[in-house]
Length: 296
Image 1 (cartoon, helix red, strand yellow):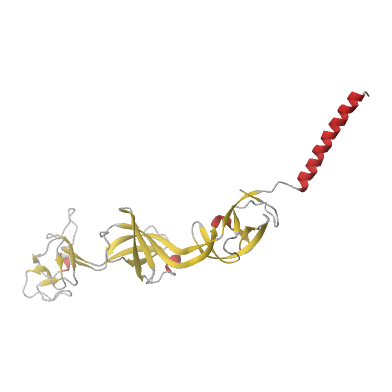
Image 2: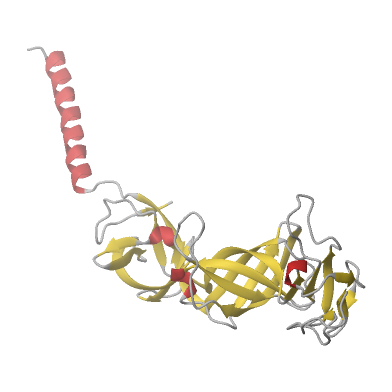
């Protein structure tokens, strides 16, 4: 073998040796996986129930002709009129009619509370010929009537705060208070799971009219300054959850955590973490305890 050919083969062998050594080093020292992290921060965490509601009067007085003991003589009120408790709403054509449950005299029907006349129909029938109220009076006080699931209802109590909003008033939110929670559930017409009525008293300066729909957030609990991490940082760990904590030396440690309030994006951490620590979000399934990572 000539000297030139010998030198060529020595070069090839040298290259192959370098490549083999590099492969061995790579196998022993694989590239650190890239991960994204989030910092454990303190924030207000709220346990909320999202639902919708309709604005309704707190009190309603509806008078039908079929419920009266005598024909109607006159209706001395008009739609939109303000009435006070005891004002005459309907006069009857009789002098000896049986006393009415809500009338102060046998020949009149009077308002049971202060309010506004919502509608007047002297004929007592609608355009289709069906019975319609002669007079309907609603109270000045309003409420937002909502329906929630049985699971949510058991943790809602009168006095809880509720945030109210409407597409008709963009960027506007009102704060109301839960006034009552029904002690029974009503099955929906479609036969679904029974819903529980929750009534909310809006603030006094509430401009939304009767019949309008609202978005409602009932705040069942709120923790100020709670430690929180993104929901995407959680991984299953036995019967609970854990997170991967990135230490100062860029290695990861699996830390079991105890959770509190959860939202669509974040979770409260009651035990296991401290403010300022970094946790891996959407962690790769192949992460291992003590593994070095590259934070992207």
